[in-house]
Image 1 (cartoon, rainbow, N blue to C red):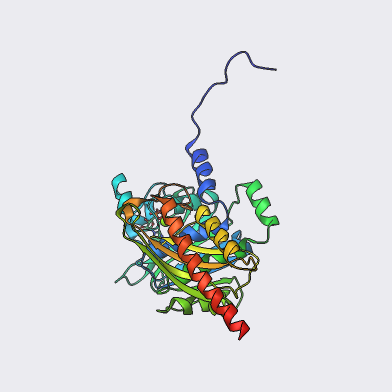
Image 2: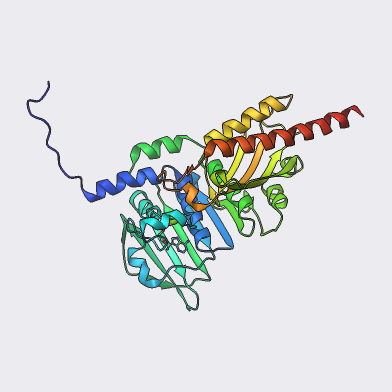
Amino acid sequence: QIPKEPPKIHRLDESVVNRIAAGEVIQRPVSAIKELVENSLDAHSTSINVVIKDGGLKLIQVSDDGHGIRYEDLPILCERHTTSKLSAFEDLQCIKTMGFRGEALASMTYVGHVTVTTITKGQLHGYRVSYRDGVMEHEPKACAAVKGTQIMVENLFYNMAARRKTLQNSSDDYSKIVDVLSRFAIHHMNVGFSCRKHGATRADVHTVSTSSRLDAIRSVYGVSVARNLIKIEVSDSDPSSIFEMNGFISNASYAAKKITLVLFINDRLVEWPGLKRAIEIVYAATLPKASKPFIYMSIVLPHENVDVNMHPTKREVSVLNQEVIVEKIQSVIESRLRSSNEARTFHEQT
Ligand code: ADP
Ligand code: MG
């Protein structure tokens, strides 16, 4: 039965709007981890420790030794669109921090219970305060604290029944969390990372600060990966497609069932499906046994050539002259692979 009149349009409650938006920023436990770790990195931490309970649904806890949060800022910390990182829209052009939307912590308070403990330099004690739906639940309480910030998210998606159900049935969220931390750990070599399940004595990711990328990769991904890597570097100084890339790619002896591409663009952990496909194609065409590669790549571009505001989760960025960059990278990988493969064939024959 079609009604005679059009349905009336009304304004949604702010709380409904916020919860809908929050579900988009925090899609799964691993999205919260990514945001929290990026906040810790933005706070210049040198040590970031993660504890997870029940795949992140019961508890996500991220502790850092960064600059902490001012007492005066605590009341608005978890409001939507509050940030210390961005002021004018134009600043997005040259923003160096991972965060800028001022949405992550707020989102977590709309889909979970957030408790923040923080201390700033020169203070005798820290403060602890909990948040719900963007607001502080009580005055901050003085508490003991050493350095930096600890953020605890409990009961994620307690108010989103469908999301919670689908996540409860999937056991792979912890492995997604370990995966993301592994990626951060090999890029940010000067930061020590750890990640473990609540109550476990052994950490599943554990790194200490190092100056060798290869050591970092070895300690996270193991010797079998590290000993099969080739260092690569590319730079293009053509003004229209200027970029620098350096990284490691697996050689002909490395065999895996699926590709691992750990990609940072201007120090942001991002995905670039086009580049991933292009690399897979080169490997399939160049190596005899079409093996799937392990790739770590850091691309640096002028900030004005990268649009970081493409996605609420900042999962992808948009890069100027993508095709040129992809082709350059492809051709360097191809030539490096060819020479490594010839060396190997020669080695096997003699
Ligand atoms: P954004 O990172 O986009 O600014 P967030 O909601 O992630 O937004 O964080 C809001 C603000 O809270 C940040 O701008 C920062 O000032 C502060 N903050 C969040 N996490 C930390 C942390 N671990 N250490 C210090 N400050 C933090
Ligand atoms: Mg942030």
